[in-house]
Amino acid sequence: MKTFVEKHIVELLKAGDERAIGLLYDHYADALYGVAIKVTHEEELAQDVLQESFIKIWKNAHKYDASKARLFTWLFRVVQNTAIDKVRSRQRKQAKEIQTEDSNVYQLKATSFAIEHIDIQTHTNGLDDKYRVVIDALFFQGMTQQEASDELNIPLGTVKSRLKIGLRELRKLFGIIVLIIIGL
Image (cartoon, rainbow, N blue to C red):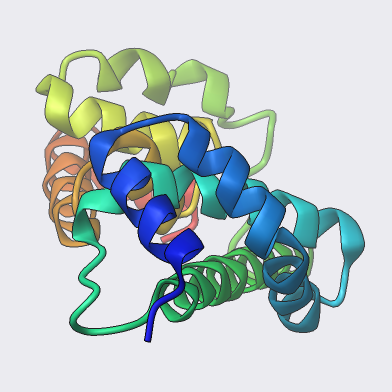
């Protein structure tokens, strides 16, 4: 059976009342922080996860269905999934950095060719906005596909499709050289 506090918090969340965040924090923050720290194993990252989770909870309060789970269970899942995403994102970034440093792919000589000579970022401006913003987020702002999806508020599958189409358009301009430079 739900407690009065839980019912009250859910009502405030559904109504978009900002008092809900304070109540959520007061009643659940310690337990949710414990979930985040257990997944991330880092205090600073766990704090970031908790903050991002509260934002997700606020934005997605309309998705909470009391008939499917208790409030704490839903909060737990949001925090746990956010923490897992953060850890995976960090691991992918680290793997990408390591791969870039240890790459044995053909290296272009600076004297014969330099990335500044083709200025890819300028040519992305010629793409449709929907493709350009995705490529900009992924390659020039360093976001992961999931981060770009969250930031641009578009589904992950759409990010992947727009990336593929945008790269195809760039490939028409530059051919294989684009793939070598951006590491694909």
